[in-house]
Amino acid sequence: MPQVSSSPFALLPVRSRIYRFIYYANSFCSKQDIAKNCDISMPTLYQNLAQLMDAGLVRYSGEERSTGGRRAQGLDIIPEARCAVGISVSEHYLRLVLTDLRLRELYYRSVPFHLKDSISGAASNPASSPHSLPDILEEFLHDHHVNRSSLLGVGITIPALITPDHARIHIAPTLNLRDVSLSSLTEGIPYPVYVENDATASGYAEGFVRGGSPNLAYFSLEYGVGGAVLMQGLPYGGDNAQSGEFGHMCLEPGGLPCSCGKSGCMEAYCSPLRIEKTFGVSLEEFFQGVEAHVPDYESLLYDMLRHLALAINNVHMLLDCDVVLGGILAEYLRPYFSMLKNYVLAGDPFRDNADYVKFSALPRHNAPLGAALHFVQEFVNSI
Ligand SMILES: [Zn+2]
Image (cartoon, rainbow, N blue to C red; front, side, top):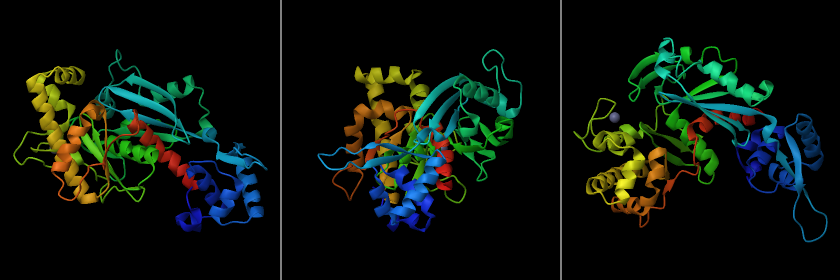
């Protein structure tokens, strides 16, 4: 149970403290628990709970198991009181997710899309992308009968470095875009909109789902390699909202060319693109080849794991926190986890285990969930 009275929550209005205590409690939560941890009297609690229940935000959640005596009634937030949409935009697809206040995935849809046409304002290809992003969003909401008054907002992720005001693409190496406005993409959406880097949003979702330690470095091992940093439970964006760009840390001066124009970057060594460029095969075919002990495939995998371990060593040395691996490549690396940890351990002069390396707790859709999380947390913080 969170200790609300001894946390920053203690300075909040009583109603906010109660709601957040219930929201963040991961176990049975009784009135007595709330009164004790929020340091409020029972009459004050009853009064505020009545307000939260009238507003449709909190409900009774059943009785605690007991061997005798009076059973305590549990309380929970009403997750479906509000919802949020997350949309992950990639070069050829939109991936839409509807979530409730617990960030549970209610609906998911993947739709073909032409990002470059949409962003440049050019007519999209009618054969494969019949609608604009706002049209596709409305269709998604309509098909799932979403009550628009309960929709908090639409979070959008894009594989690009975006400006601190979240209004423009600063640079997107994998899309070959630089200094482009995002307005043509989001114009016409009649709900609050928030745009975030895809890897950053994925890291935020990971931190939310994982709980536990408040510090986290998240590696997003997609075609573009990025990441996110969470410190004391909060996203650390840096001065320009561009922290966590782990993919462009130099691991080999003068090494393999990278999509960013430099060479030797982590992305050049630890991206699925390296596999496709080197062998012209899909990720699945590559890892089948590794299992079949194709020598060239095995040696590339080992080289990839060594460079990934080097990146983990550097980031762990800097931040001293769990390093979590997510993204499409991470899913394929799970069988080679002990080998990766051995490489990490070999490069760590201070530790006798590499338990700080972990795989993502979110099996899929991290980026759109992380984008939706922006509105969920904004709502929870507004109560
Ligand atoms: Zn680079």
